[in-house]
Image 1: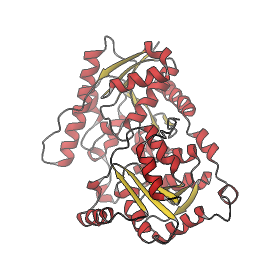
Image 2: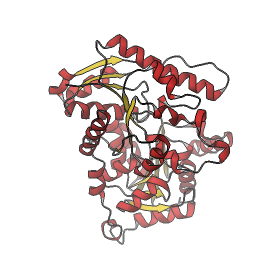
Image 3: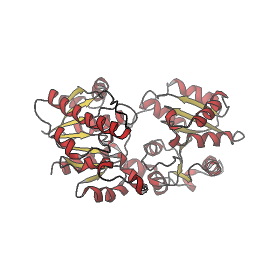
Image 4: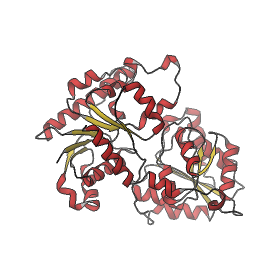
Length: 402
């Protein structure tokens, strides 16, 4: 039985979810898993609930981020911290495992890539074969000015050229030929944007507060991280211009203050403090997936009009899971998937009037969404299911061990 080391030194955003999913899938596939993360107790309790019979094949080890570099130049500081991250993982593997793992798997490879870092430097410090999920490959969709071209020392993807990098996974299939053009022949597998099918927590206190203030109005939700790229400013403007409509706007998730300018922060603060009747603000971490799913469940429409955002989005998976139509940006991966599966209405990013019109269409009581939109929620759920993730994981491992 092969032993896989599953490693992530981060524990925020999508990192815990991906770590849980990978742990479960690898155990179901019959591998021994040495899992290295910041929250071993959380993973242990979760596997006890999900796969109690597979616990004998799971070993859990604590791993932490090292201290930040104090080098004054940003890109070099990032490279130093990234190289130190590889060193930390290598040392932890040596300290904790009696034998070298057959493969090291990174559920999120982005923290291990950086400009000014070449694969030879990593190979000297990390002599293990490895593979990983590269969600950040979506940057390849955006044409970069020559002055900012990612080449040679400036290209964080240089690390991926290592012969120890046995295979990669991406969630955006359109980036595979672009990435292979950079890396040469290397197996690249398409992974689903899966989510755990966890029942909503209907006792989550925020639900009663939201529904009481909504007073039966249609709820349009912007959930998850509340950064500028998520369209927060756009939806706030839509809310301000829609006070006469029978709509209610929910903003819930961690607030990304650093993504806004000082003027934008001042504007947001003024709106929040005015406590508009058609808005509910819950800026802070949503406790867990069951609470997050409960917020999705009470929404009538999910807002995914992201700005300058070529990346994938798990909100589409949740939209399909709970059969909630979306208002989405009409570009990149999100726009493509929404149109392909008729998940909602696409609009140009930051276009207030078209956002309003899209919401009006989706809220129109005179005709059924099932008839005029004909969303294919089931097909999307199947394509991005944990079952499909298991298939993709096995394909990735087969490629890595070839």
